[in-house]
Image 1 (cartoon, rainbow, N blue to C red):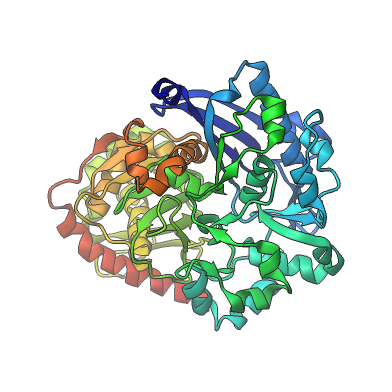
Image 2 (image 1 turned 120 degrees about the vertical axis):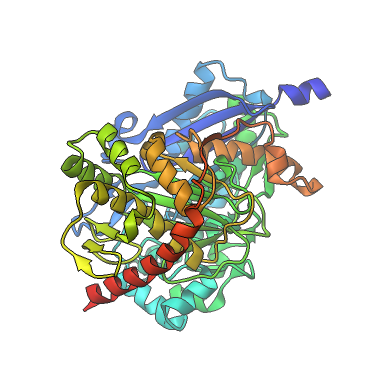
Length: 533
């Protein structure tokens, strides 16, 4: 019996915007298989660009549901042809791009429960979707619905206090409200509404899969503290909505075993568990193995901050979701649009396009930049909603420019001060043992990471997370099987590779940055208020 357990493996899938990915990990959490299907290249008949269709108004963005189903057919055939042993899979889980929604037509459940194993899924499910093209996270055509929802919840802050976020155009509740308003006939034909994550889980389950707490909390429809649908939000969205959404479940729930279709067609074990699927951001939190007090900073085209939070304070900036690896905690998410492109612009202007010169300049100026603060919003920023470059001297006077070395330090310190200020406004606290986990392009630059460590007064570790959501869901599949025995996620993934320590904070960092954080917050608020005038 033990030998069989050690021989088992776990699958994680990620239905992302441009591709479907899979990772298998063995009992020791080593990656033993990975593969993907690129939608544009391998399914050209759907005519997507970047996995989506951008409609004429440039605001409406959708993806064909059947393309996702067919991608799963292709992926499983690739695995089969490579000799992958599906019989070894003890459990699987997955993630989907957050905020996408799928509308199952009346009668689809019966089809799911009686799939003929000699045909591919996309042929069997062809007539199952009331809405052929799913609204996805890039869609921003629901401003009217957002305004109505916030009004029903007592304003933007009121809605955030219930659902963890103010109303956002891409959030599922507002997308459902738009479908109901513009296509009431199709809405009435719908017997079940899934998120991309629970839709994907439904394919494996051969039945409608419940929405998990973590992805459910990115819909503007769920009371994140009571862990149930928020009735005022449902009422403001569409009729019979609770019935169409079904129950919510903890993210580590085993929903059941794989459908007989997968047992007969691919050789899965009939005992293979399907653990609730979640959103790609929560999946990444699991893949990064964030723990209480940790913060993950992804330094890419846009910079993203993930936080593990015990006592959240929802605000109109940022998002609070339920934590995907424990029902007792939350995760916060902050997105900053001005990331690597802004850093590169300053590098080109002030360091002759050389990262080496850029790093040298960072080292040449003392931390705290002699009291000078800069905010570099080349594009309209999300947090805060402001644009332009704003520089202040040590006395908070606006100045036109800094010398090159100070400019370089100002852009990096400014970006990291913003991250800490907004994290703390959402209820994040740096505690003894806090780690900053850095990923993304700029995480390979030790001098940039040194500033990050100094601003947060915490050690910075680097992680290689090319497919963090996918990997996180393979970990979640393993945890799901033992979670009801009281095993914590951190214990279930103890054997996974550890992040690498990159830098520790310089002595005296806290004394330098605590007063700067206060000043930064006040100056940013001033810039934000001026930009509204």
